[in-house]
Image 1 (tube, helix red, strand yellow):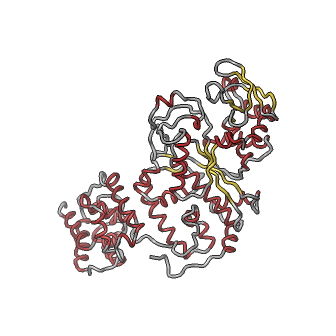
Image 2: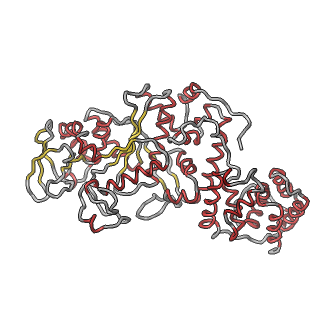
Image 3: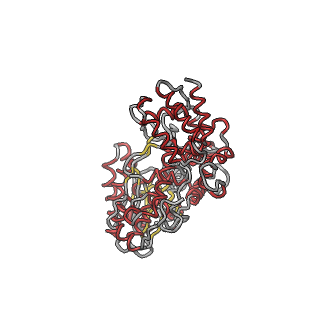
Length: 545
C-alpha cells in the first residue's frame, strides 16, 4: 500500500535548503556543528560515542549510537556530503571496580579487582580478556543494527603509543588540571587524586595514588606503589592511564573529536572535561546533553532494581524500527520506557513512514522515519522508491484480533483472519506484518490477556448492540471497513440508545466485545475479524445482559 498515488521528487539542493532552517533536533545539532566546521575537515568530521566495557551493551548504548548517527547524517545532508566518521570508543583500560553479578567465574574476577579490564582473563573463557569479550559483544550489537562505525579501544590507544603525545600534554599541564579538578572533589578524595593513574609494576592494578611528574617531556612519573616502594617509571605506552574526566578530555584532543553527546548524569563531567580540553590546547566537542529513561512510575531506570525495559524485551514485543522511532522524539525530555508504549510506537512508525513520499523537503526533514531510514548502513537513502510502504494492518488492530481469538490465537489463525482484510494475505508477501504477528501474540500473552475482562452490556447498550447485530445481518460480507464504520457510527448517534457522546458508544463496544477500555476503529476490526464472527461476539455479550 502507498500513502498516495504520487511521490514527490526531492533534490539534493532541496534537502540542503530545508536543512538550513529545519527545526528537527538532529538538524539543530548539525547546524551548530556546521557553524564550527561548515565544510568539514580533512579525514572527516569525527563523531564519537563512548562505552564502558565492564558490562554488556544495553538500550542506553543503542540510543546513544542511534542519536549520534542521526546527527551525523543530518550534518552530511546540511553540508552537501561532507565526510564524516563515527568512532565507538571502549574505555577498556579502566580498572575493574566490582565483580558484575551476571557473569561466571566470579571468584576469579575477584582476584583481579583493580586491574585493567583488558588485562583480566575472560570469565566466559572465549576471548583473551574480559574487555575483549565485552568489546566483541559491543561490535556484534552495533553490527546487528547496521550502524556504520569504527571501533577504537582505550587499551590499544595507550599501549600502542597513540595517546603518548596527548599524555605528555597532561603531564606538562599537571598543575593546571589539578586546579580544575581539586575544587570539585571531597576532602578525602583530594588527598589521593592525580590526573594520571599509574599501573603498578608489582600487582598490575590501576593505582589511585598521588603522582609526581619527574619529566613531562619524557613521560616520567614517580609514585608510591601498593607495597610501599617508591617507583619511578614512564607513564607512556600503557603504563598509566588518565582519570575519567581527564581521560575524556585527552581523548577528545588526541583523536580530534568534533561531536559527542552524553546523558544528563554526566553534565558536570562534561563541564570539567571541557575545561581540561582547553588546557590541553583543544576544544570541547559540540554535543547534546540528553535526558535519561524512566520506568512506568516515572522513576530513574536502574540495572540493580531491574525496572524499565531492556532492548531484548522491546524486540520481543515490538520492532527495531519502533524502538528507534520512540527514542527519536526530543532527547532533552525524559522518556518512560515500559511495555505499554510499544504498540503506539509500532503504529506511529508505519504511519510516519507511509507519509514520506507525499512530503516536501521541509516536512521530510521533520519526519522521524526519514531520519531513521538514513541512520544506518542498511537504509542509506530515505528518499529512494519503496520507502513509503504502509503496514496493511495496524499493530493495535492485530492486538485486538489476537485478544479476541484468545486461546485459539496462533500464527495460522491470525493469518486466516488477515485474509479478510489484506490483499494477497501470504506471510511471504508481507514480511514486516508477519514479524508483527509473532510480536502481537507475545504481547497479548504477557500483557493483554491477563487484563482482558468483558463486562455485560447494560441499559441502552443492550438495544444498541441488537441494532448493530441486525445491521450486520443485512450487510454484505464484502462490506468495506469504511462502510462498516459508518454503520457503527450511525447507531451510536441514535438518541434512543442514550449515549451522551459517540465516544461512550465505542467505549461500550470495546468493554463488552473486546474486554478492554480502548480499542480500534470498529469498522476496521469487523472487516478484519469478519461479520459473522463479530455477530457471534455480540450474541455472547447479549447473553450476559
